[in-house]
Length: 227
Image (tube, rainbow, N blue to C red; front, side, top):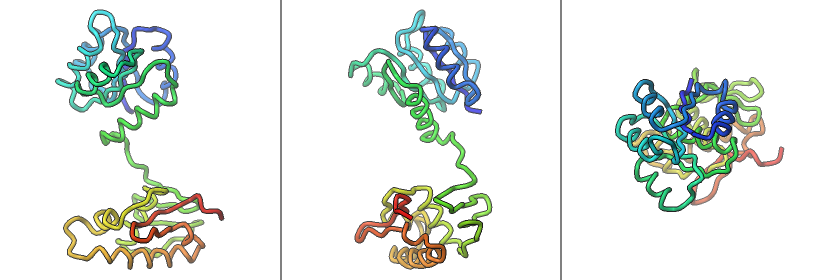
């Protein structure tokens, strides 16, 4: 479970944060900078929610300590200080994100998840979904309405990459690097062949309409297309 340290001297805000994240993460609350450093020295945390205006030891000092001693810990600043200078100082000291009060818990959660993803601390799901299509990333197979698609290794990689990035226009070169590899001797035009073959497979189930070609640009899977 993801370990989070909340460093906030406002008891009400701290309790609300702990209550909101309870059960989703392993969260510990401390109320001053000195205790924060003590816990950071004793335990490994994935993310620290850090107020700047703290008693005993201020938040910037805690941030310096994290940047120097806790290289695998992400930090989101949560503070009423909204001046640009404070934000720049925090980022220069190693903060990953900066959220000003008042705030929404949903936004705090989204920003924490973004930090975890950027640090590679969120496991990829075994199952990807697109409409009624399911991709089992563990066994590398794809199904539409429980019917398995006939995909070789390259077509599977192509479909997986498109579904992971559904709704995002992917350039041919991006697709080539992810499907064929950076060191491949093949030409990028091979992607057009793979797209054609994949489109044929999807067409068996009426899913070819979701595979959009942007001429001269690239391809995307668009689930906003009406059924």
